Structures are given as structure tokens and as C-alpha cells.
Amino acid sequence: MKLRFLAISDTHLGEDCSLLSFPHGRQHLWRELRRAFSEDGDLGEPFQVDEVVLLGDILERALASTSQIITHGNAFVQMLGSACRAKRAVWVVGNHEYALWTEYLSRRLGLDPGRRPTPTITGGEGELIVEHGKRCDMNGAAEDILSIFFGYPHGAAWRAIERTGTLDFAIANPVYATQFQGRTYVFTHGTHFRPDVLQPGWVKRLIDHAQLDRILGHLEIESSGDIRHVPPTEGLLGLERAVASFVDSLWPSAGNNPTPWTDDLWHIVTMLGGRIGRKRLAPEETRLFSREDLGYVSDQRIPRLIRKGIPQHGAVERWRRFFLPHLLHDLASWGMPASNLTFVFGDTHSGRWGKMELPGDRSVRLYNTGGWTVGNPTSHPACQVFAVNENGEEFILDVSFRDVRVGSDTLLKLAGWDEENRWT
Image (tube, one colour):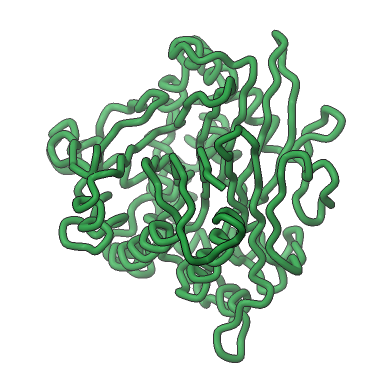
């Protein structure tokens, strides 16, 4: 089938616990994408997609070295380029790659090294850095980003882009918004309604003052404004101003260090989450679910975000209270109606769906795109891809890695036993 959108998030390329940091994992995803979306499941021809949305935390900039994310980022993009033919790709910035956004802004504005840029956003459509296969970024600001994703200036993916002259590539922060078939589609990572980002300002200042950040993770957390008190009339820019310095300091760039100091804190969180968190059984096979199918799917496979009007995941209530009012303000200023809204986000790694009625005769369809990192060898990640076809039908592709093996071990076991996550 021909797709209008294909969205994936939280691959965390560069971390050994990511299934897609392994060649076997990328090969498996390639096959499942072709089977699901190529004509009649034909593996021989790439399927067509108008826009690929990379929905944040695609790269593990905070916990992996530059060489690691270049190696795995290039390989992942080449896999996608082989699976499908895309006209446009949009990278929506996630918290684990926020340092790349800050660096991009600094270069775009021509700031001196080390000087932090004034927080800003891209607007709904994002900022083009490649148009028809040619760079169009201001001041060469996107050179590192293009190197990581496409191997600029000599990588195979970049040479193919230049040769065909067909791909547009844009950066978006914090949202990418567009319209299709009478609906407004909004894609965001979810950084601005994470529970840690939403902590009251006094809590952040206490952590900073007591130097708990240095004790736990050798970080230097910068307290910022209280995002909970930003008026909706300030829009998404107001939220960005409130969180930028905090996000920048909590997920700093690892640079060329394969094991940065920030891993100390990450190990604790991952270990506890993996040991006491909810276990997800490995699906027997990969399945493509239409929106109509989802109403009959077990919550063990794809849980609901909303049930009988009640949020089933904390992210929904945080989104509704602290992000949605600002989003609606900006959609109105961009001339995008919100009466029929589809909102797609990542970050939680949970992989869910739902529908919520909003005041003013509005309704919103919600999707969380899951994640691809293994925190526990006995729990299968919610490896999900969101898609919309040319007729406006919405789908979730839930990819099973149950039977993917590397030698005598399963890929799930290898990723889950990554020593940096303390499973050995």
C-alpha cells in the first residue's frame, strides 16, 4: 500500500540494548516493513511513503559516543531507504538527542562555542535543512546532523540523496503538525510532558542546591522555570523556554565517550524499571492492526490509553493538562483546525492507543509508538510503527522479535544482557 505517514520513535541507536543497533534487528524490521506495506507483501519492491517521521530519541546522543551513533544511525537510515521510497523525512527532537538541537541552534545563530542559544521552536512545519537533495541549512548548522543520519558528505545514503534530488529533510521541535484528509496530525516526542520535566521548579532547585545531581549521575542540572505555570497563551514557545536549560543539562551530549558519566544514573533507572516494571510477553508474530482492529486487540498486545473516558497511562493526563492547551493555541495561530485531531507521541516506550473527547466538540485520536530498547530479557519491547495510508486509514504495525536469533542466542537475550544495563 502507499503510505502518507510512517512514524517510528525511541530506537536509541548507539545503545547496545536497542534491538536496532544490531544488524539482525535492522534486517528483521526491513522484512516486516516490506511484508506489511509492499504490494501483496512482495519483498522485492520498496513501498511508497510521502513522509517518514522520526519521532524522537532515534539517536542515543546522551549515552553513546559519536562514533556509535554515526555507525548505527547511518545503518538505520540505509535500512529505511531500502525498505521504502520516501519523499520527505522529518526528525522531531527527543530528550536523549536534545544536545544536537542545541548545537544546531547555536550554529544557525552563529554563536560562539559554549554560548547557549535563546530557546526557540520551529513552528508546525519544521525547518528544512535539505530540499530536493540539496543542503539549505543556515550557516552550515546541520552538518553534524546530516553526518549522523546520512554520512554527509561522502556516505552512501548522502550520495543517493544528491543523485536522485528527491528527498526533503526537516527538523522539528517540539512538534511537527500537518493536515491530511480533513484531519490535523501532530507528532511530538513527549519531552515537554515527561514527569521529570514537569517537576515543580522548587524540586529542581533543591536537587541543584543539594548537589544530588552530581552524587547520582555526575550531572550539573540547571533548574529552570516551572512548566506547569506557563499560560496557554504563551504557546509551545513558552513551554520550550521553561524546559530548555533543564533538558539540556539532564541529557548532555556524551561526545566521544563510549561510557559517559550520565550512564551512572541511567543504570539505576533502567535496572529498577526492568526488574519491577510490567513485563510484556513476546508476541507470537508481527501483526498489522487497523484502527478498527484495535478495539478487539488484547491489552496484553496493545494496551489502551483511554478506557471509558478514563486515562490508563499517566502520560495522557500530563499531556491533557500541561501540553494540549498550548498546542491548541498554536494550532489556531497556524490556521490548523483541531476539531479532528490525531496526536502521535513517543518517549514512554509503552505502545498504546486511544480516543478522547475534548471540550468544544473536539475529539482526538492518541497513539504512543512504543520503543525498541530491551530493559529485561524476559520482557519484549513495544516495537511499534504508526502508519497512515493514502486513504487516511490509520495503522499500528507491532513487530515481534520472538524468533530472531543471533547464533545460539535470541536477539532479545543479547540486547537485554547489555552489561551497561547491569544484567550480567
